[in-house]
Amino acid sequence: MSSFVFGSVKLNSVAGDFGLLVLRAFAGVSLALAHGLGKLPPPERFVAGVANLGFPAPVAFAWLSGLAETVCGLLLAAGLGTRAAAAVIAINMSVAGFLRHAADPYNAKELAFLFLAVAVCFLFTGGGRFALDRLIRK
Image (cartoon, rainbow, N blue to C red; front, side, top):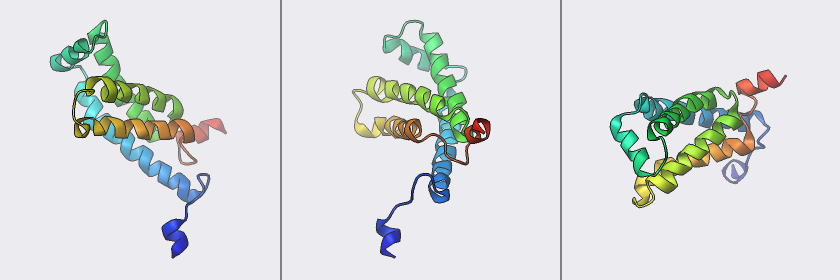
């Protein structure tokens, strides 16, 4: 019992890779469906928010943000191009957490930081054995 409570699994084990699958699939689908799709096409309010951040060509950057969340979220969920998708998500969530919500209380930026943490996790680990990346690599 103590090994279950205080132990850990190796990342390259079936249990570790299953944990990565659950996190990857849930976070990727959640990012894509709950956040990305609502930004495609970018609503005027979102474009105005991007413009207020000082980005040049705010319409283009609003599209890039929406596409990053939708497409890269789905790629992350599938484990296809996992590290590249995670890098794009990490950049997008860094902008959301550190710039867009900079003056907001923590609970307003928490979700962006949570998605950022998940993206950084997959930058380091890759998708695991239950990712499409593994099939392509073989």
